[in-house]
Length: 596
Image (cartoon, rainbow, N blue to C red; front, side, top):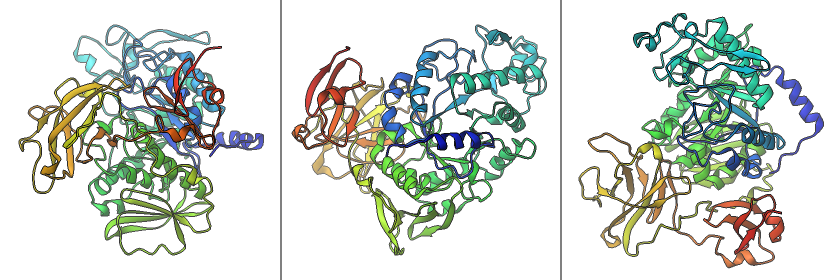
């Protein structure tokens, strides 16, 4: 599904960008959020750059974590930035950032900067903001640039800015966006991100913290191609009001994440309350769908009870069918890569845009359906258990647990079968061992859960297999995943005692801690907080068929991670081209690539 560009198309896009107005109308792209909380290994700039060929075939925009320096290069997600013009952070150096952006730019993919301007940290104290020089001019903030009602006023400091124009944030100093000096600093910073570093758009963090009009003013000056605000609220009226608040000269200047739709997805697809999808969202509103950035979960929501707790493939199928611009979350992309690739392929073949029309939708039986008209075809998505819905004039394009995606019979889907249905991108870590004749499962604990003991709660409709006393049975720590997360194993009773249907992993003590949602049980299954990833399989790493001259070639790391794949058999040199020195598994054999 390689993207093809011509000089004419690129020039036309450049003209359209001059009047992007917050988010382009009739936009057909899909965005990938390439980080989760504490994803310091998976989201390193060189790591992401090495995946450019695969990602660029399916995604048009990439949202990365805040690249501003937060005081050090140590593990820090960057949401309390210290420096703005210093772009060395926990995910890599500024040089690596520029290299990654340029690599993707050559493939037609743009980057969305995570912009944190509501608040800022000092270098060594609450208020000692650094002086930074850019293009010969020095930029610095001081006490006069902090809102006078900031909490530092009760801690020995005397901020003299205006009253905060939004909600307070007590983790860092709230900046006074009414002030000329703050506006000067922000405008310079955004110009630096867009025109120097190479970002194509902005994701504004915590926009409830300051008045919407300032996002509008900043975007009018910086002219990003894309802008999306994190207005975290399930009330669609409030999110629409924020979007309208960004207007400059009567023109909307930013899109917003569709939190109302996200919460409908939680209830409907995650919990079976299908009628919730009838609620109004940005994506379902003719006047606001252009400014809807839809998502299932993000780095914040997946950590707690805000997440979608089940049927994540079906949830992604829904946002990849609806109007708006879909944003796929890193953990979902990793866990359901093949399924999501097929969904994106179908969306793009039908040419569904952010402004596409919903022809029909509604709850039916124990499920839901929606029919969306793209420029080249119509997609019919059926969710849950729908038994009596006509699919006349449609053909099945792709399907999975709780979803079927149909398209017009005449729509050409050539190439879809190259994305193999059921192909498992997950490889079980070497330290995970089988248990014959027993119930067992593995859980990869995210680092933000801390270091408490993991316990397992496992059941079916008639009995509990983990003792019956919450939070259940203690698990054993068995190893560390490539991303640095610890992996725990639950070993239960003999398989002859029954068939579990549900499983939960938790580290709660007296309700203090974290837990997963109610997950479907798979014997020997490997889970993370997003859900089931896979189990023991015979992978292509050790599959003799991979050595056949007619078979496609796949390149794995020695730990079983798929790095590259080719639709035809290629020789070792071609397979390893562009990879750093090291050992790899190619066509079923271990090959050592040397630096030349």
